[in-house]
View 1: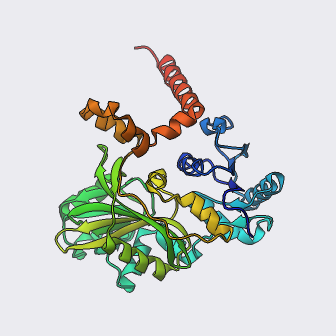
View 2: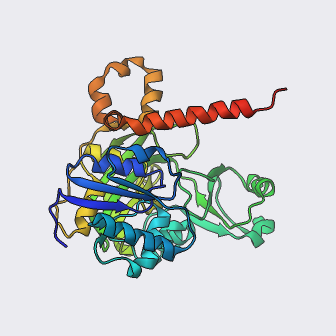
View 3: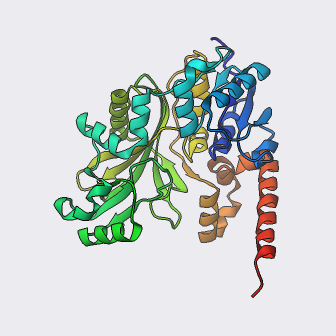
Length: 384
C-alpha cells in the first residue's frame, strides 16, 4: 500500500494504555496524520478530549478476542483507516494471534514473531536465549516454587537482584538481595506463588537502546543514558541524555537479529564498569515512557513505524545528543534549582511541556477528575 508520507490515518486499538499520550505527542509533530483511538477505558477518559484525536471509540472491556477484532474491523471500515498500530503488550499479542481475522482494508504494523515476543515478555526465556546466542547479559538462575524450601542447593553470587519472570515494567517487583539468608527471609515474607529470577547485580549505569526493526534489521534507533531518577528503586529515569554508544548499538543489533525482530522495542541495558562492557537486562516489546523524548531528539518512532507499514522507505534518522526531563523530572529539577524555571528555551525544547500547552484540555480534565475523587474520598472518610 502506497500513501503520501504525511497524509494517512492510523487506528490505535488499545488506547486504554498509559502510553497513548506519548504516542499522540509524537504523531502530533507531523501535520496531516489523522489519529483514531479505540479504548476500553472509562467512556470519559481524559484523552477523549484531546485535540489530537479525530475519533475516540469506547468499547467495554472483553475477554473475547474475536469480538475485539470485530470492533477493530468496524472502526477500520467506518473511518477508512490506513494503518493499524497497537501500542502495548496485550494489544500487540492479541493482534499477533488474530491478524488473519483483520480487515485487509488497512496495513497492520510489523509485529515480532510470536516466539520472539514470548521470549521478550519472560525474563528467564530471554536470559536463556541470550546465553545460547552468546549475547552479553547478567548471570541468571530460575527458582521454581517447589524449590523455595531448598535454597541452599543453589550456588549463586550475592548481592543479586530478584525479579518476577514476567515483564511487569517500571521496575515493579525488583529487589536487591545481599545474602542467601536475606533471600530465604524474602521468600518466607513474600510467600511467592510463581517462579522467581535471580540476576547478577552489576555495578554500573543504565542505558536504553530504543529501536524500530524489520525482520531483525534496525531501521531507526536512539540510545539514552539515565541521569535523574525518582525515589523508587529500579523505576524508569525521569531525566536522561541521548548519547552515541557503539557498544550498545552493536549489542542491540545482535539481539534483534537473533530474534528476527519486527516492530518497536526498548532494550534495557547497563554499562558494566568492572568488565568494561555493555550488558542487556531485558526488553520492553512496545513503546516506552520516553518515546516522545526520542521524537524531540529527532527520531519519531510512531511516525516511522507507520511509514514502514505503508511501504514508504526512509533513511536511518540521526538524533541530537540532548538532555531531556519529563514533567516529573522538570518539577524535581526546579525544586533543586528554581532558576531552571526561567530557562524557557530548555523547558520548551527539552521537556514535554509544549505538548501539554498545545493540548491542554485532557490535562485540565484529568486535574478536575483527580481533584473531585480526592475530595469525595475525604468526604466519605468516617469521622473519628
